[in-house]
Length: 146
Image (cartoon, rainbow, N blue to C red):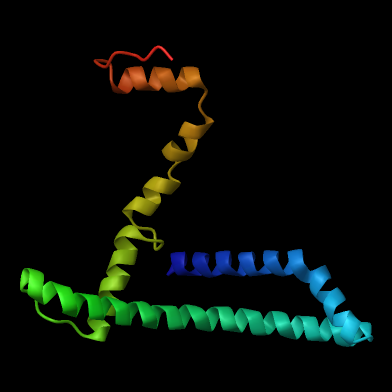
């Protein structure tokens, strides 16, 4: 649940960043049509609220679309190839959720590896530190001369 909140926070940050980046240009566009500054600001705020709502609804629609794609692919392929039973839409959503937990952005194994201190730290190492690390991890390998 915490990771879903983190995802929502990241989405909000991206939307806010985009809005702030484009705010002046959008306001200038609106002001050419609506001369009153307060009305133009109100309209810009309404546009932003509509954008946020549409963005959230798109996310819900995307889950439904992916569920339909998953159930269609599963039922077309898995019974014929592996002899597995057909699944329902809700079972397909369960498979999607399970795959997100294991491999995706809900804090699964591969997500933790990508975000780990080790992976980030590797890029911060100097070439000499990387070479020492390689020597410790693989002492039997000949060291490259480059």
